[in-house]
Image 1 (cartoon, rainbow, N blue to C red):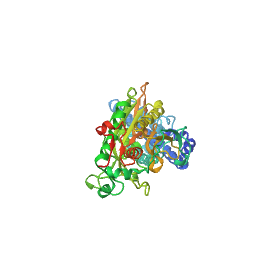
Image 2 (image 1 turned 180 degrees about the horizontal axis):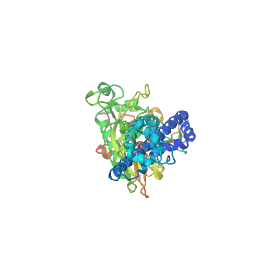
Image 3 (image 1 turned 180 degrees about the vertical axis):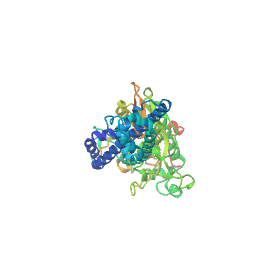
Image 4 (image 1 turned 120 degrees about the horizontal axis):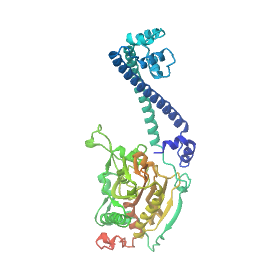
Length: 498
C-alpha cells in the first residue's frame, strides 16, 4: 500500500509515476474522497470535543449543587457563567460549547424561564434559590445524548469513507524506482547480462516432454487425477526433482545465510492482503472451504511461499539489530493461471501446481537495494552450479509485478524453444508490503519504522528440471547429472532409460 501522506502531499507526482507503469490514477476521485474524509474528521472531532466539554460542565454543575446544599450563601460561578452564555452575556466565551450544545438540542422550558430572570438585579440569588442548576443539568444531559447520536452517525459516515478509501488504496500498485526503465510491456525489458554460452548440439534435440516421459514424467497421469496442467513424477524424474529442491535449500541455508522455514500451504485472506495478492488478484488463487461449508471463511492455497515467509513479521516490531532477516522455504505453489489460456500447454512450463524454493529478506530501508543485488546473486549461484546458461533482465515499468518497485528476472536457456524463459524473479517491494502488514523495526533512535521486504525465486524447481533435462541431454536420450546434484542422487551421474 502506498503512503497516504505521500499521496496527499504529492498527488500529481504519484499519478505521473503510476502512469509510467500503465496505471491511471483517478486524481479527481482521490481528492473527492479525501475532502469527504477531512470534513467528516473535523465534524467528529468537533462533536467529540463538544460532548466532552458539556459532560465536564455537567460534572461541575453537580459539584456546585452539592456545595449549595451545604452552604446556601455559596455563589455557583459555573452556573452563572453558563446562563450568561445562553443570554449572550459577557461570560459567553466560557460557556460557548455548552451554549452551542443546548441551542442545538433545543433549550428546555425551564432553562428558557431562567434566562428571562437572569436580567434581574440579583442573578446569583436566582441561581441559588430557584433550582436553575437542576434544570441546566437536565438540559445539558439531553444535549449530550443528542450529541452522542450525532457523533455515532458522523463516526459511521467517516468509517464508511475511510473503508472506501482504504479498499481503493489496496488496489493501487507500487511506485517504480527511478532506475527502472520505462516501458509498456516485456518487449521493453532491458538485458543486464548473459552468463554462459548455450550449448551447440550435434544431434537433433528433444524437448523436456520427450526426454522426461521415458524417465518418469507422466502428464496423462496428472490429467487423469486432477485435469490439465497437473503432472505426476515417478522414478528417476521424481528423484531428480527432489534433489534439485534439496540442493537449492542447502545452498541458500549453508552458503547464503538463509534460515529454512516450513510454513502452511493454506492461508487466510488477511495474509494474502499483506503481500498484495488480495484483493486485486483473487481470480489467480485456489479458494478452499473447510468441509465444503460455504458459510465458513474462505481460505486459499498459497501461490508462493513469499506469502507465508513475508507475513512472519506481520503486526510485529523487529529489533533493528536483528535485520536483515533472510528466510527460505521449499513449498508447492498453486495458481489458477486464469489469464494463461492457450499458453505453454505442453509440458512443465506452466502448471497449476509446482514446487519452488523461495527467498525472502526483511531489511533496513537503507539496505534494500543492496539486498536486491545480493538476492539476484544467490539465484544466479544455483544456475551456475547447475551449469545452465542464463541471462538477467531488468523489468520495465509496464511489466513489473503489482507490489514491486524494481524487479530482475533470471531467464534460463531452453534449447528446444531456442529462447530464454523465466526461472526466477527477484523484487524489492520497499515498504509497500510492510505498510499493509504493519511490519516495523525499531531503529537506533528508538523510533518504529517500516521495514523493506524483498522476495525472489531460488529457483522454480519444475522449470529448473526442464532446463537440466534439455541442456544436459545426450543423443541417446540420457541426461548427464550436473556434478552439484550428484551427491543428492546417490552418486548417479547419468539418467538413462531402463
